[in-house]
Every structure is written in C-alpha cells, then in structure tokens.
Image 1 (cartoon, rainbow, N blue to C red):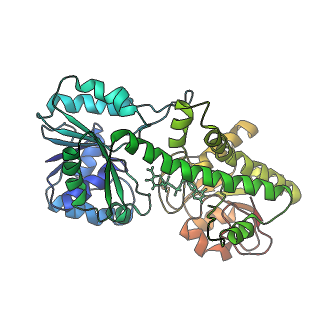
Image 2: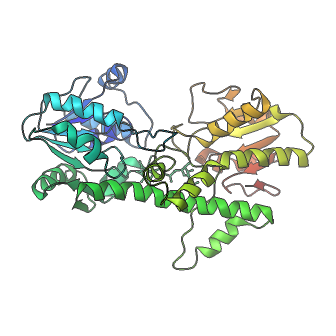
Image 3: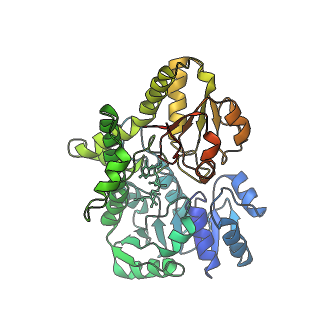
Length: 401
Ligand code: SAJ
C-alpha cells in the first residue's frame, strides 16, 4: 500500500492515478475539511479529466484520511514555499510530514519526496531525521503542467533520485504503473537540481521575452512579430512576453538557486526581477493609455483574468492580484472592475461573474489572462479601448505590452 501525504494539486492526481492503475492507495492530508470533501465524493479543484479519474480511483478503493498509515511506501507532496527574505526553500512542511511518517513507517520503508526542493535539501533537512532507522529516501519531482496534468502524468518522462539502484527499481515500478514516459534513475541531489533547473530555464526564457517586450515598447517595435521571425531560426526558441509570471513553480523555484548561490546565480536573479516587474509595467501601460485617450475615471477600467494563467482556476502568485495590490497602494483603494470566468468566489473588490455585465462597465479592457473564453469573444471588445497583454486580440487599434 502507498500512503500519499498531501492531497493538493500534485498529490491528489498522483494518488488517483496510482489507485486507478491497481495500486492500493490511501491519501492523507491534515486538512480535515479537504478529507471530508474527498470522502464525500467531490474533487477539490478544476482540472481536465480529474472528475472521471476520481470516480475510477474511488471504484478501485482509494481512501482519504487525516491519519498517517503504517506501510512500506510513502509519497510526500506537500508545499515548499520560499522564504521571501532569504529566497531559500522553506522545507518545514516536508520535514513535518517526514517526522509523522517516521512514527508509523515499517522497517525498510521508502519515503519518496515529490515536493520541489532545492539541491541538498534532503541531505540537509530530511536525512538527519532518519537517525539509525532502516528507512530509504527517494526524490521523484513532479513535472506536470496545470491544465494538462493528467495527460502529462501519463506521458512525461520522469526522474527518480535514490541512494541505491534496488530502491530505484522499487520506486520506478510504482510510477511505471501509469507513466508511459522514460523513467530515469539517478542520485538524489541530481534529481533535486534537475527539477529546479527545468523551471529556471523557463523563467529565464520568459524573462528574456519580457525584456524584449520592454525594449520594443521603448522604440515602438512589434515584439511578437520579432519573436515569431526569430523562432523560425532552427536553433532559437523564445517564449512569449506576458503581464508577469505566476503559479507556484516558475515564479518560486528559481529563487531557491538565488537564495543558495547569491554570488553565482546572477542571470537567474535578474531574470526573476524582470518577471516580477511585469505587473507594474502593465499598470504603467494602463496609465499611459488612459492619458492618451483622455480617460480619467479608473472605475471604467476592466481587468480580464485573475488566475495565474489561462484555463485554470489557480490564483497562486497571480500577476493580476499583484497588479491590483500595487494599484491599491498607488490609488488608495482600487476601483477597477475585475472578471474571471474561472473564479466564482469573491476574491477582490468590484468582481463580476458575467462577461456581458463586466464589459458593459468597462471602456478600457485589459487582457491579463488568455482564457479560451476571451479568445473566442474578441469581437465583443469592438468599440472598447483594449490593452492586450497576450497578443490574442486581432481588432484594429489594440494596445500591447
Ligand atoms: N508564461 C509566460 N510566457 C510564456 C509561458 C508562460 O509569461 O511563454 C507565464 C504564464 O502565464 C504563467 C507562468 O509563466 O503565469 C507559469 O506558467 P507555465 O505554464 O509556464 O508553467 P507552470 O508554472 O504552470 O508549470 C511549470 C512547468 N514547468 C516547465 O514547463 C519547465 C511544469 O512542467 C512543472 O511541473 C511545474 O512548473 C511545476 O510544478 O514545477
């Protein structure tokens, strides 16, 4: 039996996937309300195909509880925030989970850490907890992308870091029950580093695109056309500029390297600062465009999109929320209108829950997130002033980053 600890965005789909593929799984989370929801037959967030997978896993006997189970295999996928001041990984949740596991684990058990951690975290914070106990450690960092999680769980290649190959083979078998990609077995520190490097590579590439957007804005060049043409070169692949980088991975993990290697991680440090500057860059664009159009009433500005990226309901590190915070500081109370089709809860002031009603109240619409809804409805923006931060609107006169 595998006990999956932490039933959030990664732990839940992983637990369901294993259960659906014939492994006996118990999911544990200290959040009693979450356990009640799952045990009551409901999923806890929106994701393509999650509902169906949940039903299959339930039929195959998955159980949810707040208790840690006595068994020989654990997967720990609890959050690993970073300390905003030191930029270092905060391993407190992983440490707490492993301590609980150690109280119940049987001799020879393996604890697989899935949470993203900086290189050296297992040796520094987790291994000392084992003392003389006969318990094995592994690191199998997740790689799935919100919005396409279930497909990627099955099809992505994976990395497993272990101390010895025999344990590597045991852990590999669990993942091979559903994963059709190649599963590479390596040492623990290499596995830790690869995960952080993958997200850092993407963060630096996005920062480069964002910097190009700023340069192009300065001299009125079309950054999208420039990137499109450059990417026709066989060895160039620049990502897209945007209103900022959110989510719990690309906006967080690269800081671990800056925190641990401050005098070495220079490009990474600058890249993260560039990405973090984007919400304010958008805010300045809004003020510029209002001025150009003789608009004085900020309450006629409509912000489209609250989530950190398109077609998900995840608000973590959302660029829109960062921009609204900044706006509030500047304006002493934000009065813009806000709408997101994926956010049904009331999370900010002046939030709308209907696209038509939202558009009626806005003369300047800012596209912060390229949800499919707005891509399909750009004709409804006719007659409005539009600041399109994702280059999805083809109407004449649209403003860009
Ligand atoms: N973004 C841009 N320009 C782009 C692409 C993305 O500005 O060209 C922005 C998005 O709008 C979003 C942010 O970056 O705000 C991050 O989105 P994302 O789709 O790039 O990535 P995540 O955070 O959803 O998922 C990433 C993935 N990592 C890589 O692609 C290397 C995923 O595979 C990881 O599993 C995940 O991080 C994680 O958990 O580490």
